[in-house]
Image (cartoon, rainbow, N blue to C red; front, side, top):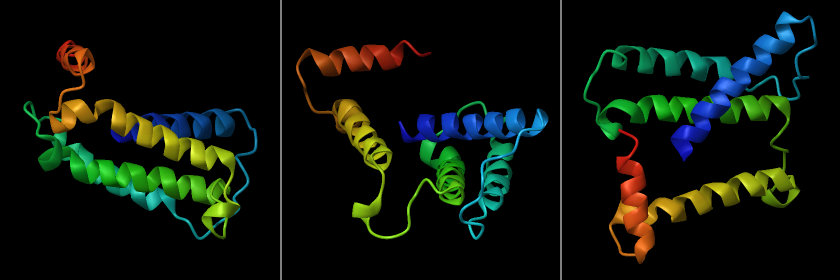
Length: 134
């Protein structure tokens, strides 16, 4: 879920930037200019580009580095836009906690498959669902 979420956010951020910049609209106001998400985006491209021709991939061996840079890019972009508020955890918006709850729920949803424990018919359904992606 982290990989899909960071990839979807990366595409959404690129789409928002292109749509707002291409139509002459103002881009979102920068509230934290110290955050430099474009460095993480460049690192993502550099780390991911050599893996494009690889036919048989292993997640940790091939995609862990691009995943790390994708997550860093999304977090730096959100910080730059002011989505993450300065201060303690109590000062954050409810959307901040919603994203954390979704990450925890998605982790729990795939944990029978990840850790190999039985969860009744759910783990069998999950394994069949993942096999259907091929």
